[in-house]
Image 1 (cartoon, rainbow, N blue to C red):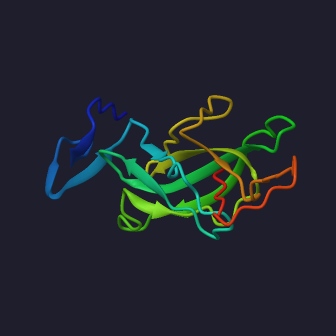
Image 2: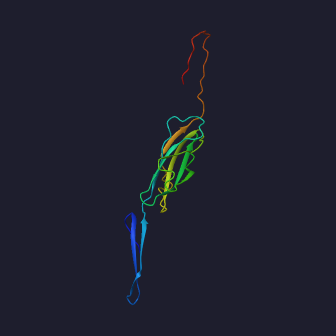
Image 3: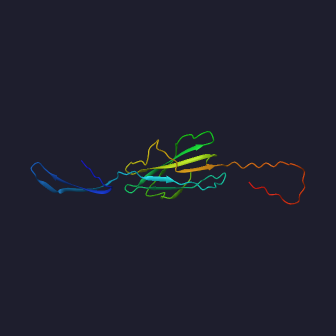
Amino acid sequence: AFGATTEGNVWIGVTVTDCAGNTNAAALATVTTMVDRVAPTASVADLADCIVPGATAHNMALTYADATSGVVEIEIWADYDEGDGWNGWYLYDVVTIADGVPASGAAWSPGTLTDADWSFMAIATDAAGHREINEPDFAAESNFQIDNTDPLVTVEVLETYYNTTPVTLYY
């Protein structure tokens, strides 16, 4: 039985001895293995306060870390509310990490989003198979609103008035 208690590389040595007590020095084998007992971390950052209407990409910083075996996959989960209540978390995208690419802190884009209040979260999985968290422990890491609707400006004429000075409306 193997009972490593620390994280990182562990050296294991094996010597073969038969029932007569003979030991074969040539059969001596050593193995180095990685012990990983800790789940990785990941997060997705908020978008800018001002989002360009009609934009087809909204870049968000995706950060991740794992001290031992390395992050291999990040699930991006989303939830949104179009004014009638939150719809529930669903798997929006999966980002595969290969040899540190994309790098932690790299921009990730969810693409075109509909008008709604949005929440995103990232869940990392490391090479040892540890997953950061599981449902129903989801908690939003990024919250923002997409609003592609132009503001409505209404001007009522109260009385006839002639003026040669331009009028500027602010909204």
